Length: 124
Image (cartoon, rainbow, N blue to C red; front, side, top):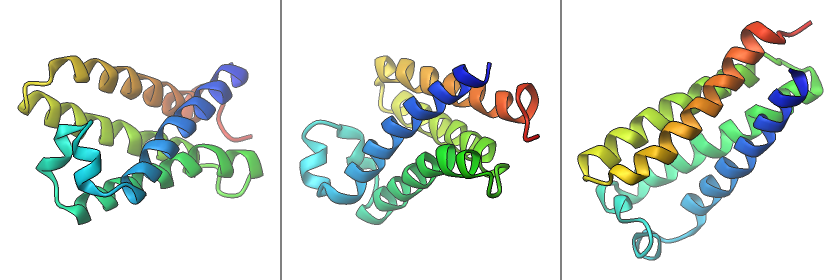
């Protein structure tokens, strides 16, 4: 089970790390060409979401790997569950129902990590 959790943590960290960096570095106008939902947010809000996603990506890996405050790993996963609920709400409001599927998949993956690290393979 630990291997499956680690694999999911790495996959989620890569996805959210890349998306978070993109939200921090790519100008809103350029991002809007491919992701219309960015027009629903201010530049500052997008940066805040990007910081949250990047922090969660780091939190999925470093605390558990180093043993320093490993409780932060399942908490980072819970944070991503919350982010994905928000993302699904935004996409539903915009009528982008196909995007909700990816939100739900990522939400379930993050929930698996949270549950796994809280209950199945907790800190020793």
